[in-house]
Image (cartoon, rainbow, N blue to C red):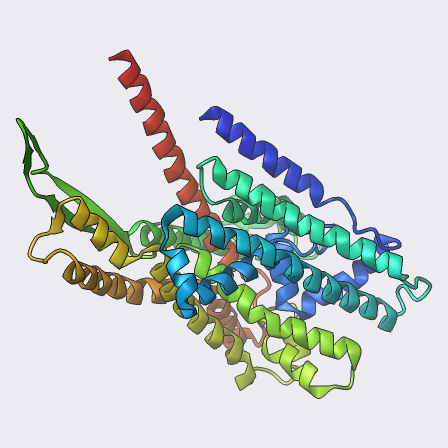
Length: 462
């Protein structure tokens, strides 16, 4: 098992090295200002920067990140539900899953090319409009080289994610996104630490007149409240993520010759949020695409009102863009993004749960193995019963997942009402949810692997 862990760590190190290889288009430093402006305007850019571990901010070859692979997965899974022939393939066990995964990989390449072209075009137009890189005119060779490098970076990330998945310890895509978020913590902690130690304007913190600390009082109490709130949220995240419904499975007793089989009981655990963090990632990627389209339209024609409207409506409201998007204060448009985001999380939770928890397949397997739920007839009746249970759990689980994703917007709304502007320390609900969920999934996978190794050792000794 240690070998698997070291392989995963080596893959993550290689991934972090890729984040520092710049895109071969002129001087990469000339695009830094355009990138920072883009990060403030487009939530899709922030999402890409999140899942690429700062690849967008550093203008590296993994700038596009895993977004094409995630988008391709959404498209293939939607088609597998809409087209009967694809649905039959998806139900064909491991062989069908391999075919769908192969088609997802093939679809990732054109999506990566399209997104690479879009981002290079937007960044170049931003630098030209801001007079940052007017001396640099990209040639056809520059375009081809840059698009090829960015597409290759996206494909390499997809490959690294699948290599991690093959090790049997968690999902590779989720683990790469997890590593991306964690990799940005040192920078965040360093900036918070410098602000905390800055006592030039307010003086040191005096605690009850008997203890003086060399920290900024206002920043200290804000961070203190922030840490307490985050610990409470993490506690409820763990509870919700671990919540599950236990269904008892009975196996009929069968006699074959002089040997009897069955006559035992087992359990079928159904998680409250069986889809995990995937619905939040899907909803963020899906909802962020209109903002990218608006950016492209605005770059082509700055006077186009449709592109500007599309960008403003589908850009996640935050402390960075609140003043520019809402100069006259809170308006009804502020609620559009959170509302649609909340609904998409619920929809994707139901959709993804139906994919990973196929009630018909589970009912068929139980019937073949001689298993049944007490008081429920095997076959179709069992499938309907399981579907009813899963739908009830999804109702509460999807709303819980949606509310967790809404935490930054709820926090910002409270501060807008109280102070007139959102708080800059509002943590990303998506990021926190990904970190907690992936950490718990990896911990369970490690426990399972450790149990298998222990069982094999015990079996060999006996």
